Image 1 (tube, rainbow, N blue to C red):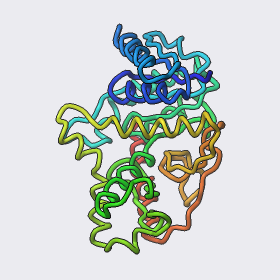
Image 2: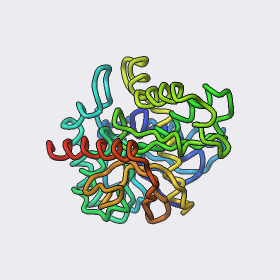
Image 3: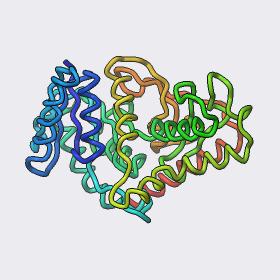
Image 4: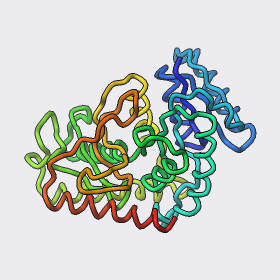
Length: 305
């Protein structure tokens, strides 16, 4: 059986662990510094197995030694966003946490693929890549899958169609710097530019960019976790099953799209080796400018670290 370790047993981590277990993708280790919490949540999930019909093992641990032999490590630990906070406000707080976790990953699971979820995700992914010293294909961030899911949701609501028929594409950073691509977003192969007016597309694009903040404002005491967990699980499945899925992820660029030495959201081929290929779309001037501006914001963040 494959093994996935989830670092952080908060809402995102615990929901991710449950989805991986339910789909029998891998045995799961849930790691957290708070004593008893990962163990309790792990035992609770295990007891859902007889009802939902899965035999996956789920265990909780406080000791990072338990991540040994992991095929994939999903990192969700860190401070969540609070109302009024930008993802970049989290930068210094989470950089210290992620740096320490990255050292432990390099020590105990040197052959693993790392999926970063902690915000600001593009900068934390770069930080992890630097600290672990892993090859760039084995460190990636979860961003575009979630943003594309949000975009698809809003399009389905607007058109009153099934979300299953929508293939959305969102590039760039995870946040205000994201770059939704209406030309590459389709409903059963039909570009949404043929189905919706530019005003409506602009409105849905803006709602997608603020999708995380909208949920933070509603919840008051936390941030989104169901859709983020589903998005990470899709990435985990693509890697473990070597599906070669084309998904937008935060990946390290060295020249693609005229961008270098930064992690930013682009379409990639995900397989057993992690990021197996970066797909370069033919972008128009405005899209390319938006993507490069997005990358510049993260380069600033990296410099401030």
